[in-house]
Structure formats: C-alpha cells, structure tokens
Image (cartoon, rainbow, N blue to C red):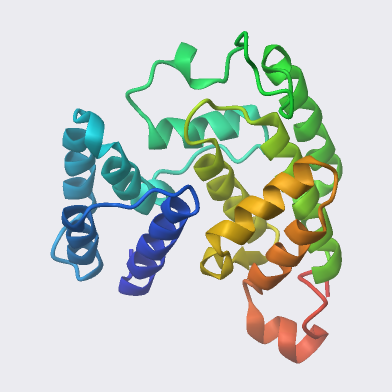
Length: 236
C-alpha cells in the first residue's frame, strides 16, 4: 500500500467504528499511526488484532486493525450474501459460521426482516442489484437514489448479529467504487447517520439520500468535471 492508501484505510476504519459508537484505544491508534508511517507492516497488525481478539474488552481494537487491512484481503465481489459473509469473516475471523448470521429469537425486533428468511431476502436483494448492473454507469442523482435504496434494504435485512453496520459500510464502499464513485464516510455524523437509517426503516429515505449525496465523490474527478459535469457519472 502507498502512504496515501494507508492513511485512507486508517481513516475509513476509524470512521466505520465511530459510526457504531466504538472507539479504539490509544494503543490501537498508535499501532495504526505506526502503520501509516511505515513503521509497522500489515502482518504485524494482523498479529496484534489476533492477540487483541482473545481479550473480551479489546474487540473494538481488533475490529479497528482488521478494518484497516480489510481491502488487502480481496473477496469475490458478487453483490450477494456470500460477499457480505466474506467481509464479515474478515472482521470476526474467530466467530463460528453458525453464530455469524442473525438467528430467530423469541423477542425478535419486528422492525427488521424475519431472521428465519435471511437467505431468501438476501437472494432477492442480490438479484435486484444484479439486474441493475451493480449500479454501474449511473449519473450521480440516480446513483444516490439507488444506493440509498440498497442501504435501506440491507439495513432492514440485518444479516449479522454483530458488526452488521460495519460490514454493510465496507460492502457499500466496494460497490460504489466499482460503480465509479467513492464514499467519504467522514462526512457522516454518527447521530445523523443513525437517524437517517431509522427513518429509512420506517419508510422515509430522504435523510439517507441526503447523507449519501454529501458523501459521494467520483473515482475519477478529472474526467467527471471536465467532460461530463458534477451530476453525470462514469457512463459519460
């Protein structure tokens, strides 16, 4: 990774945790700083994350370091539940497969998709996404609208009992980048982000669309700005 890529990876990992109200410790932040400066290699972060996961009170630090490195460990980008599982495994590699997916509980949250039907729900979302060519070649307003739709659908699905939001943000970042847009999660205020997700779950995606619109940046800004204009995307 280049120094800029390391800095970007650390910034994303930190923001991804903060959006779930998780705060890494000073020692984990120091390890990330050493990584950005080239004083610590990726393998050292992997080893540190492995040691941290064994301590119940250090899971956040392990998640922080693993998220920093998540893009160095590619997975099959199929836009389906298997891709979400692959990302989730990178965050929680020690979690048994049978405990990863959300399971039906007597007091299940009625605002979420029925846990017993996760496989079917995920398949429907994956098929819809594939039919839309994974949101490739869309102008910016259309892309924002459709990404908000899928963020809402996947939040409602809530595939994982733990780290579901973190997994979704990694997935959405991958999906957006491949479609020609990058997401600047640093623009997402945690309180506004939670409110937007909750309102979307109740049927109003206006706040979620506004949030995504503030985050979307073209992967190739020179081509977008000089040839097409801000509201037009990679198709032009």
